[in-house]
Image 1: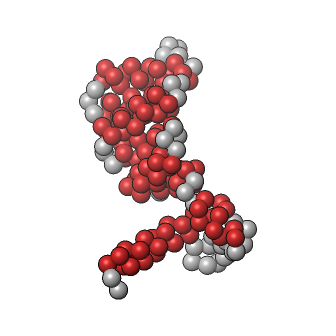
Image 2 (image 1 turned 180 degrees about the vertical axis):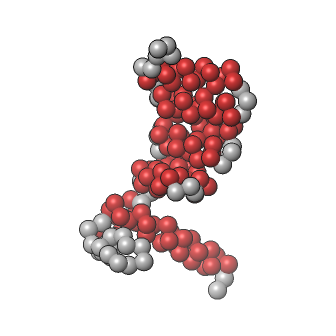
Length: 160
């Protein structure tokens, strides 16, 4: 087997491995009780599902799932795939920033949160998360500003 054929086979195998868990939102037939317990496409719909697994929302949902189970490194990859498919997906930037924070990378989190805020200026959750990232990185002044902005956007008063 030559080098090019080997690369093509690896790429095809990766596409199958990656696409199987993502078919759930694109199918009608089921493989209940199977290893993956996800629906399976047949015929022409299989080709559509193969193309459709690139949907940004699917990667976003998988990122949330991985983040929720504590696998922040996989979550970063999923959110990055969602962002690559939809660069204006502010929620995906927020998700990836949370995963970066969980991995201890506050600088990349701040960059993503700033992007989320630029995309959605009234995004209170992004201001809150960026404030927490600034706080964790030692920038108390900016943390206070962002946390106050998040509270303002959420309608929370600092007084009793």
